[in-house]
Length: 118
Length: 108
Image (cartoon, rainbow over all chains, first blue to last red; front, side, top):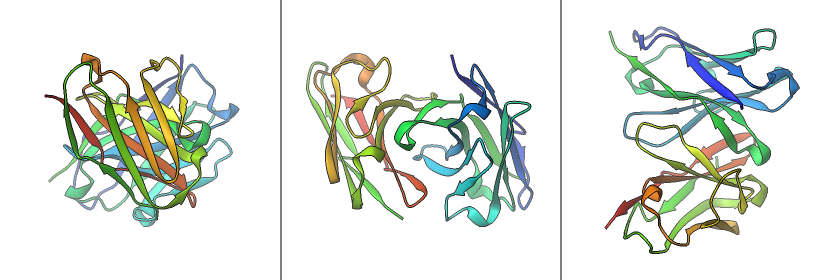
């Protein structure tokens, strides 16, 4: 059974960098698929942040591209998100996920709430 | 960027009734890249349908997806109590994923 678990600080100060890591179990990320990050502001809808292939190639949401870096560490079976220069608008539940057939998302982490506040 | 518009915003129905949810794209998308999700409060979304009409593993037969081009539909043939939730459509195109704004299916 594939499982994903997000980890990282739950509180980040404005203008700083949000950093999260997703640890995958039950599947070797070097075997294939895209791996991605999706967020959901409280009470609102879902927003794709970006994805990374096991080879390291990335694609990002154009609206966030200038502030986002997604990286992968196949030796640890992890991938990570860095979002720079955060503001209160970046407060959200952040999900890591596996991108499946047809670029749908079949496995999700439980999500972690990140609040941007001083 | 392709924009997905879901309607209605809220659907008020009783258990046993049929639910029809709409997802309209701002431009034509491949059926291979249209998916539907269910989300309950405090939980991550769950994949229901991928490729516009293929059911994900473990999804009951009462859920079905259809459509092509710019118009897609998720149908729940007979609502069970556990089906009351928010539903999102999602597409992939031009190296970008986008989600619709969601339809809430609530108990009437």
